[in-house]
Image (cartoon, rainbow, N blue to C red):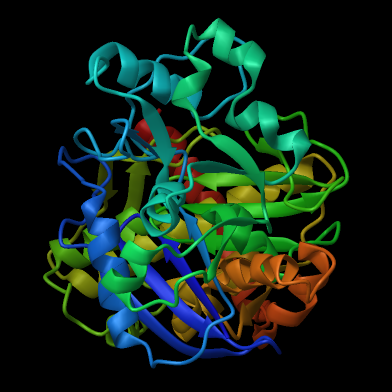
Length: 450
């Protein structure tokens, strides 16, 4: 059995996965301090340890063959020589960075800012998110590298020199799917894990989700939704379009071309908070929204930025509100705005010749049948849900399978752990309806926000 854990933005998810690819048990632990995009707060690495320990207690006890960790990024944590945190975590969505022109690294701009503005004199090592917890479990200081093509997007000697950063600040790189370390005596006592249990390098959560969703062949697409969302296309070449993000894929020699929707999950969380529904069952909330017919007179919601580079929640607005509108009508407007952002992302991909026939959807959205059907109708694309809805956990298991010698490559392991479950076909008449609604929405955006 593999123990997989993903350190998300707002919670930690952990699961037990069998050798034949089934998720046997799962635990989700929200952090005690939940980061919210657009709000000032302090988030500390101890939240990861707290959530990891609590998740372990929630899962059934069983013999383990490996532990594999993924996490959000680019996130960095400054530590002293013993690996103890020196203050708060600089999370992936933080704007604290100093970027050098024409440099590719996602991590070095943050590292430069930390060294210029924080605890420079005491900092001896900079850890990324899952690698810090790996260090706490094993004592090994590492950074995960999917493969050599990805090195410039993490750090390399040329960029370190450009940023004037000391190489000693950065851990040694290990490959995705290699053993990064083994559970040491202290971690064994603290968490009840067997000493010597291999801990497998996985790295970034979005890379893990590509493996766990099975988006590993050219033309396959993963719609990964959490606090942010990405429409990730497995391609044989980069797009060359500045509105899309081109990165090497977890599987060589492919590319991951993504339309980034940076705040869709945050918008939905905000709506739940605004309408007092944080404790309301997700399905019940969707049922209420679904009672509002698509053809109704209702408000329009614009989250903020209207260009095609980012979909950020800020300076947002509702338009055409009427006295008869309540939270259900507002909720419908919010969901449709998210759906239109997804559709626009697909348009950008198809505009560079990357045809989207269907999308494998992952994350909490998988549980919302109403929302899945609505997204299929708005986008006009078939949606597939996965048996392991948190594809990061399945991706972690893929890497563990390689490390344990059960699979030759992460791509081969993906065929074991990425199992489709449900299909949502777009309904023709609703697709036609939303084609018109989408065009009116974009026209309204230009008039009202231009």
